[in-house]
Length: 396
Image 1 (cartoon, rainbow, N blue to C red):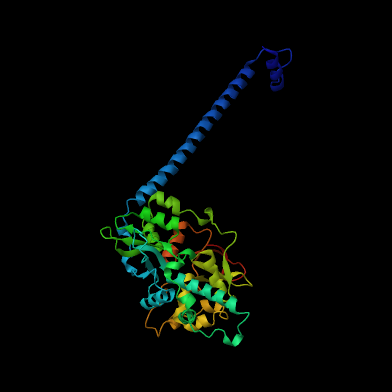
Image 2: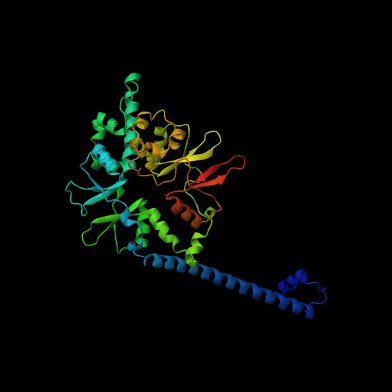
């Protein structure tokens, strides 16, 4: 036996120095150690195999999901033709585009190119009425900042309503629709055919952050309707009960990462509506939370589409610097319609003072169901306050 083996045995075995020959006890210990080593190696091999299997299952689930969504035709999505197809031209003025969309009671319009620059498609974008109105609000704010140092107080705010403001300021109202592409007012025009698939639609909605996807007839590229986010969510929920689908949507939303969770965008109820509508314009988002300055409690929401009210009741725009967000979100929608004869474009949306919320321990499926049931395109992540009634904002 080598010397280093003897020294190691002296440190690991109670054998006497005079007895260097291994006894039966030593043989049993050696056998036990070998067996333990074998068991450990076998467990490591099994663990590695389990990890590989889990990775394969994950890949298979993703592949299964893609194949499943790629077999669902666009024609199976409900409500495609429920949205009216309307268009404005690049040569139209902003004032005329707003007026005609308001009169026709349409929320969005296709942008038709009349420049003859050789675009392969007749349509080059999709614009929402709310985007026009947000742009007008920002232009009015800029104009007020320019004239405030030189214009006396009694001459200010002589215009009643947004359309009147545009009439009084032709350098703003006569701006061509085609000139606003650089302001990111447009959504890109990415149509799908009726033979397209749900997977393609999901790629369009998620990659380009679209609010709606135009649907065209393949024979003549005629736009026949739109696919909304809510319509897609509604169809996805019909997959409930399928194992691979439930394994995704039954996870609690606290397991997901939110981009703006550390710094939630919000406005205070005591701010004026001009300040408040600047946030969704600047951040390019569809809604912003309204919180109470003192309690920090969530008291409502302000959506881009709520700018329609500034058209329905003209004195709201005239009093825009004095009207607070809290006053604005508590207005009764029925009182703002034109003698009750014409429904508001956003009349089917939840009230501004009753925002859609979910809790951290809700599942993704619960969030999807809440958005479909309330016809909302967003939900605020909130926690129930312990000392007072209401919700405290966590994220969106």
